[in-house]
Amino acid sequence: MSEQHQPERVQANRRQFLGTAAATLAAGACGAPLFAPRRALSAMRRLGANDRITVGAIGVGGRATLLLQQLPESAQLVALSDCNLPRAETFKAKHKGNWPVYQDYRKVLDRNDIDAVIVATGEFQRVLPCIHACQAGKDIYAEKPLTLYVREGRALVNAVRHYDRILQVGSQQRSMEMNRVACELVRSGRLGRVLEVRAVNYPGPEADPAKPLPAEAVPKGLDWNTWLNQAAWRAFDKKWMGWMRWRDFSGGEMTNWGAHGVDQIQWALGMDGTGPREIRPLSPGPNGQVGMRYPNGVEVSFVLEKGHGPMGGAVFICEKGKLEINRNKFSSNPPHIAAELLKKVDVAKEERKWSDELALWQARWHMQNWLDCIRSRNRPVADVEIGHRSITVCHLANIARTVGRPLRWDAAREQFERDEQANSYLDRPRRHGFELPTT
Image 1 (tube, rainbow, N blue to C red):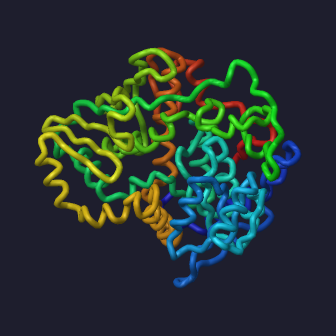
Image 2: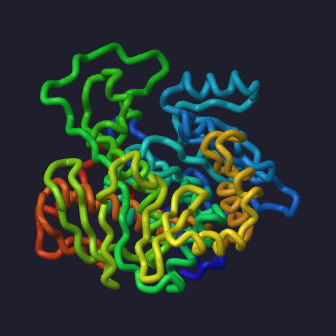
Image 3: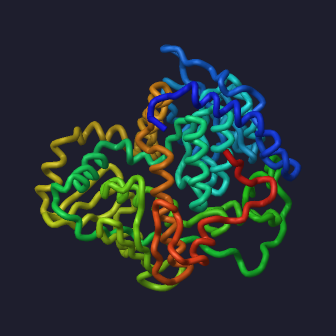
């Protein structure tokens, strides 16, 4: 599909889908968030030149709170939703808002007056509401890590393209000028051939405890069934709420910080639409070092110790020197490489824009790019395909650790060559009622 808006063809596709949506999505557990749009998507609100883009929040946890506090003035927050209702109510009270608060995000998607949604749930909860938002005609800002496994990422890309939606992934370094010029320098070949890329060896997740955690009373206001989302049912225990620790809910730091670091590698190598050809464990275990080879022969090695390497980037060793790229900064050996590169940016301005002292984990200008693209219908700087491909590389690293042997990856078909066991990790069984819709 072209990057330009194609309303006639897209609306026809939507009408065809709506005719079968109810039948496709009707089955499911009581209370599970299945969604069949109850309005024609062609009746979406038309934005005037002076209209503010109206936004609903799906998930109002820690990261979402920061995003909502940084929402640019060209947008207006109009509704909150969270299956953990007290979190949304706390945000509303703290900011003295008058927004309606819903426990069921489908009520946000049902509203004709909402143009777009910010989906800042956990990664295991993220893809389903994003696809539902596509079906409801909403544009989407989806936090990273974008997915829990590879195939749900492809399903999301397909939905975004099918419904002609704008989806910006929360990889805010794509909007940072320091990162842009540094990645461009590597990609242009002006440092010569890339000999090797060294990245942090981001830890993976932990397996579930050998013994079931003791059941506790579900806190008031928490819809535990919806919180679990696609994951297998288990009794509530507050330890599960630290979801980033557990394999059932997360890819660990490999997909958390790795989503940023790998994204910079993909960008600098010019591999946004593809990925590595070979993946191999360099040391054993769930946190073992991993090596990869890209189709152009570049070796990427996840070998740097956490805390002793650029968490938001990588070290690019090239024929003419070494360039280390991190969040909103870079350095080089020899130093003149970085010195020349710094002449291309207003360093003081960039540091003010992205300073953590101004706003923790600043994302305002990344969200502004999203809002601009909602109006122009151009693809954003961290388009869904880019986010999917970057997080796929992180998933591949975790899979290589799991199977403990070299793998060959077909990026076009998004599957491993002649390895059924490895391919089994590209998908996950989803709990009944939380299956992905077909588009």
